[in-house]
Length: 365
Image (cartoon, rainbow, N blue to C red):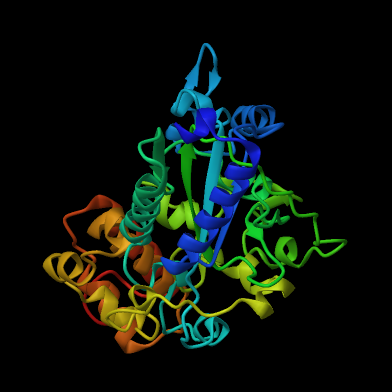
């Protein structure tokens, strides 16, 4: 097996071949790291102890007597010696996000979720890369990950030389910003690691100041319970009333910290057609999306990451956004159409929204 018996020169050659094969498969960057993420376990433990994970119990679900699997790759794949990290840009040529956010009648969807679900595409592409390595060197032990397992993606990507951790906790790269997905291949191959990238945030605090809910409580420290992405995607129940006005027209995720980051001025466009906006989600109004029936939601968002929140939370989120929208007959009419919805969660948020407009739940004013 190459990873056990290949010499350093052969390993360096294989590493450069892997980088080239990755580019041929459409990845925008490939990096290599060892199997350790120094300080990750301590940082994760402190974050969990503070309760910043909210209802994301899966963040704490991988603790073992040997340590937390998120912080120790060798617990996920015994024998892991090297990790191949891949970056795939997702920014599409679309309407300026600031224009959408400034128009209270339109719906803002995080840019990463406008196209097809990245999980399947990225996982399949990583598998193709692993298959290419196998054809070259024969069988080796590996496992592919794409944001669906306990992996410290940002820490591994930093160790792989693909960027540095920004103060908003996302990975940043000088020529790519932060509009990209990450994926990993854990391997038993002994591949020379790349050098980590130094931090280039300096004294900038634009991302912290831009957060609508002040969820970035300190540099590199995010309280997910306040984060709009958490509130609109991960939270299953009621969105806290005090936070609802701060969501504005954001119905799925939030990009404000990325929009404020100076490095994203240089973010390139994706070459992946699958990441292009679908079903007009980059232009849609809140009223038209709120009118979707459940079968329309399921059909139109098939293959979209949005579908995983389900129709009930979709309506919950849009109801909040409608409550924050400029008052109009169309907005109030849309809300009243769902005032008697079968879901208590939807009814609660619709009633709140109608109160914001000084409107009753039914009838005419």
